[in-house]
Image (cartoon, one colour):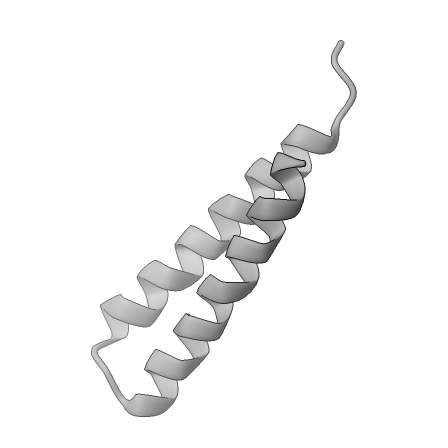
Length: 52
């Protein structure tokens, strides 16, 4: 369940990063959103792995 929410959050963050870049905002804003999106995707993937 959490992985689905994190994938959705990552999608929103990627959309924000693309939007901020197209608006011409400072680079750190869209880079930060992209990094948060990547972190959300990694966390969602790790939650899908079976417990050892």
